[in-house]
Image (cartoon, rainbow, N blue to C red; front, side):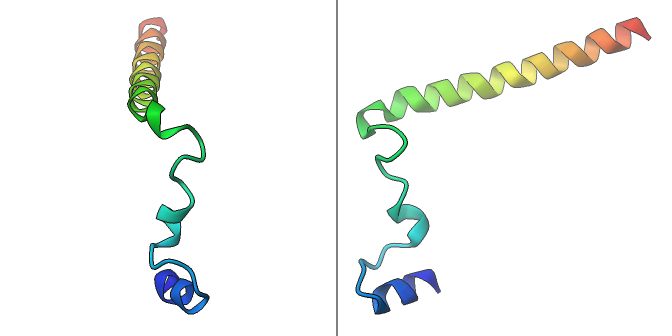
Length: 60
């Protein structure tokens, strides 16, 4: 639907969710670095959650 209404408005036929994300939050040249940093953040957060859970179980 978004693609159809976008074409009627005279825009390119790309979906709206693809149109606004490229190169906005970070430059394309940093794509791999950003992916690695996001993966590290996810892994660290899960590891912290597991550590906290084990620590709570040890206290009980």
